[in-house]
Amino acid sequence: MNKLTTVKLVIAGVLVGMLSACASGPRVYTDADPTADFGQFRTYAFLEAAGKNAEAEYQTLSGQRIEDAIALAMEARGYRLDIEQPDLLINFHLKTEEKTRTSPPVYVGGYYGYRGGMYVGWPGYVEPGYVDSYTEGTLTVDLVNRHSSQMVWEGTAVSRVTSSVREAPNETVRAAVASIFAQYPYRAGMSTPLDIGTQP
Image 1 (tube, rainbow, N blue to C red):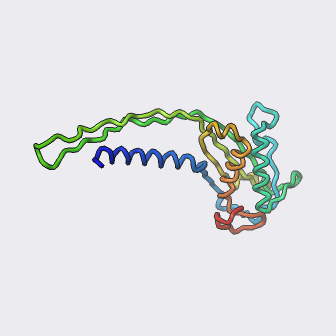
Image 2: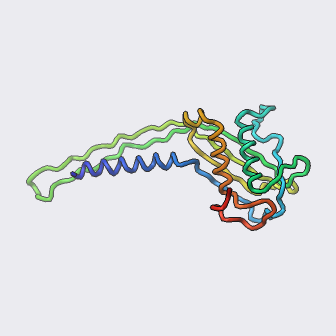
Image 3: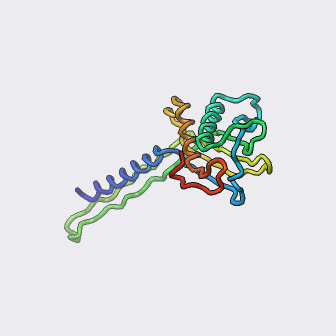
């Protein structure tokens, strides 16, 4: 196998790895109030404005799916719905944004034989750049201490919105919410965080 072929295979392998990483699931980010005592939280309710934009006075189908998935995640961790006197208030918001990612052309240098002057090696070539336009979806879930009106935990999932995502909204929402709460390390009434790997 010559060097030019090897370089092409290496580039192809890098691209495959990038695509595989993108397909592995959403990117999840979390943040928490380090002073919050999570042991005092046992019940929850949703903010009336959860899942609604400034203009809408009703909840969308996506909003209802997200609320249902969050309720399942909270109940799996021992929290109980209490719309009268909840310990935690939950807000969530979903947004989509058009994105463009570009890559400039890359020059792959040639090489020459070690028998100086006897023959000419490959002159090199240019890997063309690309422009990748796509839709990115961001789901954020906020947990707020109702007594202090202070946010105590936030989880965000970011992923591409593909045709398969649009065709399976229920599965997509459940997977996104599950990925967020997989990083939530508390159970109802417990102050000590659990190992993330033990979360339901």
